[in-house]
Length: 430
Image 1: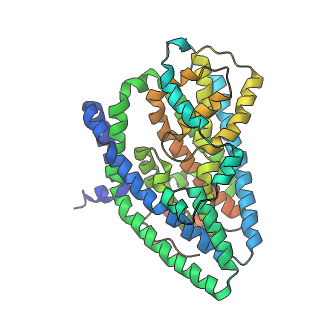
Image 2: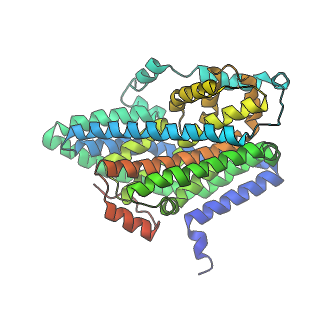
């Protein structure tokens, strides 16, 4: 029985699922492709409970706040942090792309590439709303419409308004917030049940990735993939590591604490698949409920560090691979444009590639057809994007919580020292 004990741990099961998925996808590609519904089904099951979790956490947290202005200051600090760190990520991708030059020597003729491959992604990018439309889209058509569509930012808006309303309704508002706390326990309980299926989801998603694209595409563009992974690791260890150290905790202990979530994201290529679990774990680490509930969902649109690194690095790769000269001024323009287009990406698989197409559309020097070079390996890089996004938003939550005096530092130190343990069915109140 003692020998079987490690296999009862979720992250070990996820590792086994990933390994089996790689094996099946490599040996029997058609079978691997057929496993796609397993990965998609797991992500859909998780998403089923994401909107209610966010609503209950945010609305209940605001309803209990005695100083509503404090929430406004929290929002302002969050957006400021996101913008500064996101710019660091974009700049790092640009710097590494210029220094390493992973696309040099490819000598690809854009005319030899299939333009239809890039056209479909470009069409999706052009269909993205402008600034005014984007802001208007934050307002749902109906109260329940946002929940039905799974529009996280719309749910966030509804939760904030509901929380403000409850805070002004006295005793009745307190009763509503108590109900929301109880409801959140139910949805976290649902997540605790669904997450046990993570090994199956990781098996299906990884089997599809390897079966569909194979290792051949990965080998062909190994320089780009390796550069991107190395840059992301550098960002996490150095940039986020320094930020974490200034906030009083170790980035390595934090990574160990969320290892199960990291492995689930690795298997599913979607950081949304662990959003509720991250909210719960960050509360266990001492972050306040309202801070954890606000920063993580908002970060999925405004703080995508992995996507930011990918955008500038991949853009320079395509320019180098097609021998397209780019001046320093154009690179700085790319950085400025990416600061805007990166805010439209989300935590789901493939969003980073569409955002890259949107960026290339406004940097006409690089032929849009060059996107075809990345199609075969984008799925492999999507995993790294999602992992980096997840870590970035987790660190952001703890840093902003401390900045806003909403972090129990003793709890943080104790939990990180103890390491991850079996999560309770619901987060602690408060």
